[in-house]
Amino acid sequence: MLLTISINTRDRSEMIDITSRVEEQLSRSGLKDGVCFLFVPHTTAGITINEHADPSVEVDIQAMFNKLVPWEGPYRHLEGNSAAHIKSSLIGNSVIVFVESGHLKLGTWQGIFFCEFDGPRSRKVHIRFQ
Ligand code: ZN
Image 1: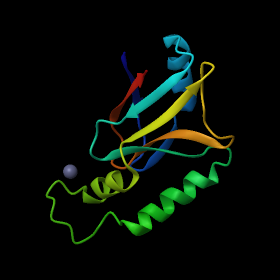
Image 2: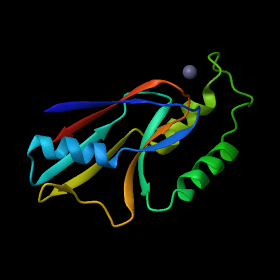
Image 3: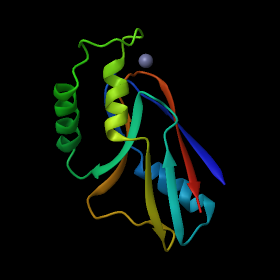
Image 4: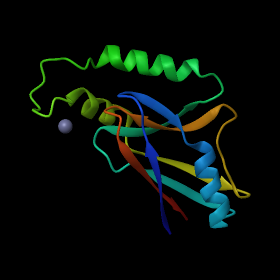
């Protein structure tokens, strides 16, 4: 079963914790043990798993990403958002989480983040529980 969650981002660069929304879809699906696949169908966004206990971690990740891949650069892509495409490839557009006893088997400090690199936009995350 393929599910989709919609996200409206507000900034050019943003990390949005979607863990509770994924857990909500999982509990509706009724799956007890299996696998949760998450896929972002965009070329200027991505998805990652990282610490969601301390919000300064996502601030640091974004700050260093912006330093590594500046918005202005010697890019050729005419749309003007090459930095977002590069960040999307660096962070990746899919993650897998195991499901155990009806819950995501994440580490204590882990959360699932949708990563916007060229917002604000309307975005989607596809989810498959199996
Ligand atoms: Zn582009």
